[in-house]
Image 1 (cartoon, one colour):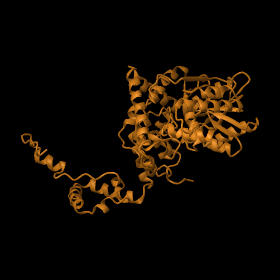
Image 2 (cartoon, one colour; image 1 turned 60 degrees about the vertical axis):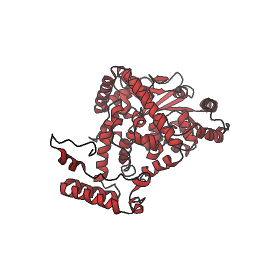
Image 3 (tube, one colour; image 1 turned 180 degrees about the horizontal axis):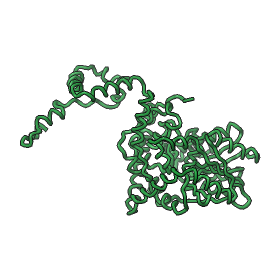
Image 4 (spheres, one colour; image 1 turned 90 degrees about the vertical axis):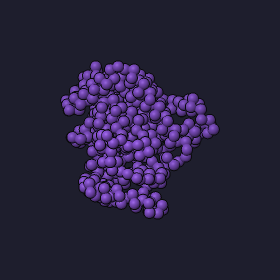
Length: 470
């Protein structure tokens, strides 16, 4: 059953209108990440070749996914891991619960995993008496504030240090007036350390899974995934089936692209490889579909499965930078969220494809060359054809389509609109329901002459307009 439709415009307005600090702060920091990404890319002469190769490897893997999944399972099992298959979020969460319950584990420490977010795993476990603690600093901030991550790589990027000081003061007793990042980080490190030692299991996701070895790779900057996988006796890894790579030699290409695209750094601080359980420990791997097979069968949208979750498209998107990630009301936000989220629930996320300027910057920075902006446009077509648009917008677009189809109607509408603008009362023209666009800006005045009229007047090569006429 579909949930209530996300009002992304209202959510974005709430973030922008919150104050004069958060939206400019968010925009500035994400644009800085984009600039660092550009500098890192320019320093690699073969950058475009790497993007081409990565895209081709992903396309090959996804079109032979059954073979590589079975190969991964066989090799992971050979190294002592236990592999589970989950068709959807419910099966994924049940596997996790069964593993924990059978070992009487009631406390879990986990690192950042978008798949586990997608499955709403934490809420599922906590309602069954299992304590789940996020170990990634950004994810922990969001967990304490009862919010989902707002960015794939930087989950709490929409918060200021002052916001975090208030949250930590309530949760772990720090000084609410001390917003020094080092002080706050150290306080959380000391709090998390005790939770690592008490946890019965550590959970991770995976950035990449290697079919030929049955290994998987986790990339972090805090080392939290490593300690979570090393201290508790049980390690559970949730891996989306699209994370497969055929060979170890493929991995180097993606490692070079991932962190440079995300934050402009050469590599993440930790790039950890897991092959089988450690001595005396257990390793459980849950290969999860949750709609990916269905997406793989969508001719216009299967390319989205190439995504390596770097967040570069989010950092460059002018709409995302100003509206904040929580505006999307989904696990995935930004341009990649716009093309992923409707595959989970078309009705709920039917407004997302319109939360874009279609400038194409997301496509330009994607390290695996996903045609993001093209897919956004195609999702608009899907939403229109399935009548997910509000009736007022459908009528408006229908009328506009008729006008654009007939030049006579178009030129008549130009003339009528120009005349109507001069006599329409201001309160009606800027009505909040009829014209939300005008809440924050004035409509431009119509030019005295249309471009077509100007062109017809001056199309003769020997007739140039004077500066005054321009």
